[in-house]
Image (cartoon, rainbow, N blue to C red):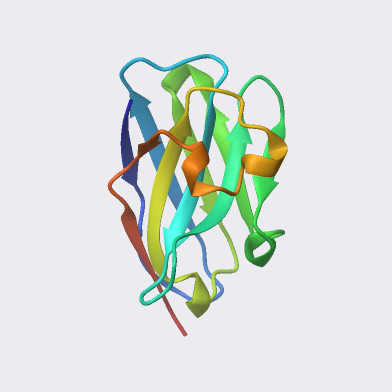
Length: 126
């Protein structure tokens, strides 16, 4: 599966951005898609994920209440609405895909996902 992320850019603290990730190729109905991010000098970390065939969404604590992940099944696209942005949200954001319904405990793990997008840079200024 190929993943094409878009929507990154420069934003001021307190404002919003929306990231999109379109999946192409052989996609599966029972998938899990999500986002990770990597800030300069830090390890890549889980941000959010959504599992197909329900309203199962999952968020890392730093983004709960500010970020919302959603999907458009017809377009094989996942969105990450990022509100109330903070400078610490500055990172390269990576879209991820797993051709399966990842179990809850494994959702934040990088090894749960088979495919990764190229990354889109989000820079939040104070």
